[in-house]
Image (cartoon, rainbow, N blue to C red; front, side, top):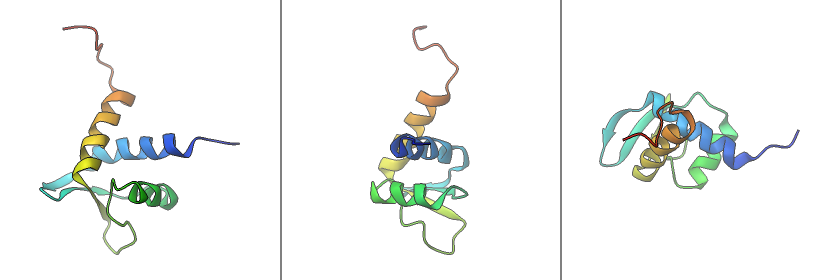
Length: 84
């Protein structure tokens, strides 16, 4: 089966927002229990630091934090955006 790897990466980035912690000016940490190839794609896009380390979490860049939160809202929100 063929699939859109960018959509998968966006979905994983959105899901990383569920486990974000330790936010600082450098970004925000999140648990990295996701497919390594997807994490590598997010790293290549500049949204997370290199996931290949001994930490159990990965650092989302400030751009990654912003994009993660926006994608999570876009993909999983149940609120009606047309309501005030």
